[in-house]
Figure 1 (cartoon, one colour):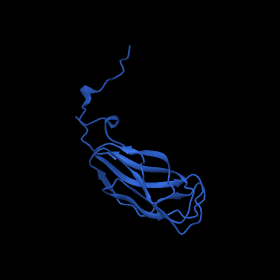
Figure 2 (tube, one colour):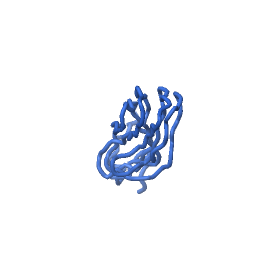
Figure 3 (tube, one colour):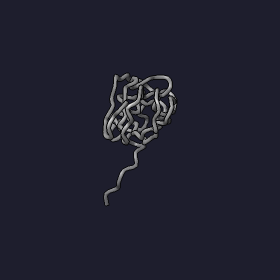
Figure 4 (cartoon, rainbow, N blue to C red):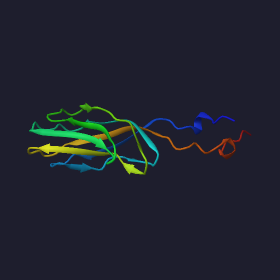
Length: 136
């Protein structure tokens, strides 16, 4: 028997609003479960970034860099940064983080880190295990 489409995995977005900080470092982003395929990742700048020497952001889970370092230097509020993408599976429950490289003085910026993900673990529920509405 085929699985119902309501039992199969579908792509969805995870996101977290973060402060990118004032110095080079890693900022914890949205959480994903083990066996999650990251299809795309990026950053939306919420508060404008000052024009300094260097301000780049990458999106990574410390094993795979899903979005390569991309400049957000002097980015206006509302700017969407997508950068060069790499697909990857998060083998363990983890977070998808913003990794910044900052050269210059900044007061920091607020951004939304997002990723489009799919749970690629085995769909183990069959029709007999699904709770159904009972029609009277």
